[in-house]
Length: 155
Image (cartoon, rainbow, N blue to C red; front, side, top):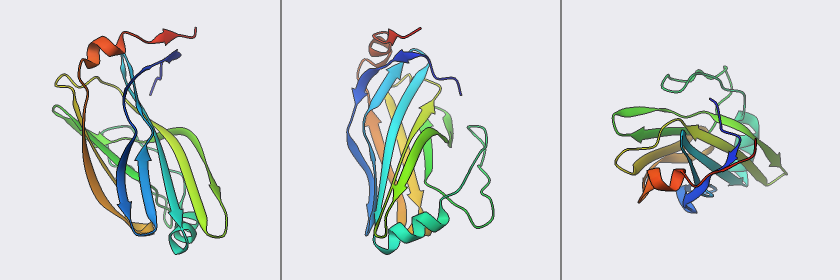
């Protein structure tokens, strides 16, 4: 994944992507860049779900479009994207987590290396090991290609 050194144009957000008892995940916004979409997500788990998230959270790595392996005993928030004829798991970059006895918060960015030609993106999120059932959300972006050109370079 190569994220541009630029400030993207905000084209959507915020939106709740999924909620199950004790755990929820939301999309803060979507930043459009000429080469793709940047999606900052936040997950919050409380009570027993927070404890499960602390115990389950672990490293994951695999290229986009392939099933990401999980180390034995570890799991994580799964994010799948569908845009046009491409579907695949999107893995996080950067971010962090914080935890207390009864609250777990995880924030990470997700990069999708394309601008959907039809202006729609379906996101599917789940983390069944901590109680987050699978949820699907369709995002619509009017004038996406035009908006992506409004980025501001930092380099």
